[in-house]
Structure formats: C-alpha cells, structure tokens
Image (cartoon, rainbow, N blue to C red; front, side, top):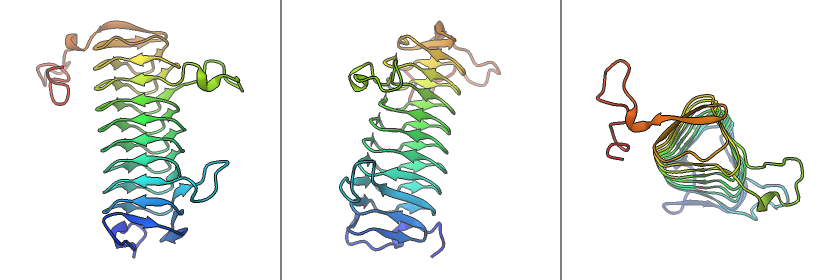
Length: 241
C-alpha cells in the first residue's frame, strides 16, 4: 500500500476503526485510544493521538470523523474531537482540548493550541495561530492570522481566568496577517482587512482596517471593483444576511 493510500484499507471492525494498541501504518503513527471514521486518507508521515504533557499514552481519546484528509507532517494530540471531513494541510499542529465540527479545513503549518472551539464549514488558512478561540460556523480565516489570548504573558497566575481568546461570530471573514487581541469579539458577517490589529470588538457587518482597526464602512456598502458581480458576498452563505 503506497504512503498516501486510503485509510479504509486499514484494519477495522465497524464503521469506525478503534485502535486499542499503538500502531504504525505506512508511516502513520496511531496511538491507543484513537477512533477514526471510515474513508480517512492519512498521508505519511503523521502522528495521531500523541499524549500531551502530563498524560499517558491512551489516557485521553482522540476522535476523528468520517472522510478526513490528514496530510503529511501533521500532529494531532489526544484529547480532541473532530467532526466529518476534516482536512489538514502539511505540518499542521493541533493540541489537546480542541472541539472541531464538520467540514473544517486547517491549513499548512497552522497551530491550534489548547481550548479552541471551531464550528462547521470553517477555513483556517496556512500559518495561523489559535489558542482558546471560539469560531462559529462559515468563517474564513486568512493566512497567518494570529489570535492572542493572554494580555499579560509569562506566567500570570490568573491566566485561564482572564479574558481568554477572541470570539468570531458566524459568517465573519478575517484577512491575511491580522492580529486579534484577547477577548475581542468579531461580529457576525464582519470583514477584517488584511494586516489589521484588532483591539476592540467589531460590530456585526462592519468592515474594519488598520492598526488599531477602525470601522471604515459596512459589508453592505462594498462594491465589486471589476464589476463582475452586483456586490461582493451576494452569494451563499452570505446572501440575505
């Protein structure tokens, strides 16, 4: 079986393959306690179910839904849950305590630290960094977006009780190289321009740009420069919002 062969050729006893012992399948290292749905495409080398610091192998489960595509050099730690049709780019790193819904794409070299909650049909592009972030459904996150979660880094004793990571409401779009500060809420259907530093909440439907980011217009006011469509985002899932 070649390195990129479908994981459906791996041993399974039902619709979901539960692997009770550590195993290596064509360079894909699968720890105990990992449950993988049918139709997965696991591309070597990658590691599934790596134990986080302080946990033993197999102590925490890892559940990956059906028809996942896990590309080479991805590491997914134990202690997380993924819905159907997960896709990862090469070199993605996903830590414990992540809950990810269906149809989510996590790009090459993206880093999801602990505590993220990701809705369905979310695109997290290459090189992004997330920790303790909540992202609702149908959100686009451009390349190299950084979500921060700690206003006083370096061993604050109340770190986990403070503001936490940002919240991105459904249908929002975040451009490339944006930085979003702890506790910020990006409103539904908002648009954050590339390179912005977001220090305050973004109103629903607003377009913000700059450092610090400021409201410059609303999504309903946008026009298509080349004139190819009546107006930007006048298509599903944004139409009528």
